[in-house]
Length: 111
Image 1 (cartoon, rainbow, N blue to C red):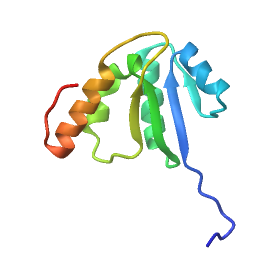
Image 2 (image 1 turned 90 degrees about the horizontal axis):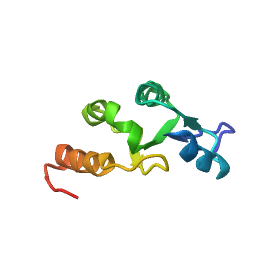
Image 3 (image 1 turned 90 degrees about the vertical axis):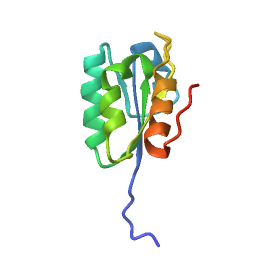
Image 4 (image 1 turned 135 degrees about the horizontal axis):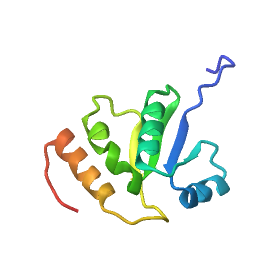
């Protein structure tokens, strides 16, 4: 039953300017273009605290600075998902997935 109020859950994107432009063109409203890993880290920490954000896509080239923070969080919401970047290529996303599975399921594997 709907009481007239609507809870909106957000998908946010943190990426370099070129990658962010693609998501903006796709119509996503909560896209943050960053230039440095420090800037991405600050934005990521702010979005994790936002109550209406449920998923954060982060260009893996900017995730290295925040990797330990993301892995060590008790609460798995919002979900932080590494995505490939148009600006850089990397392995952070695969390493993050492996570390999360190991810490939560106790299974170690390499991708």
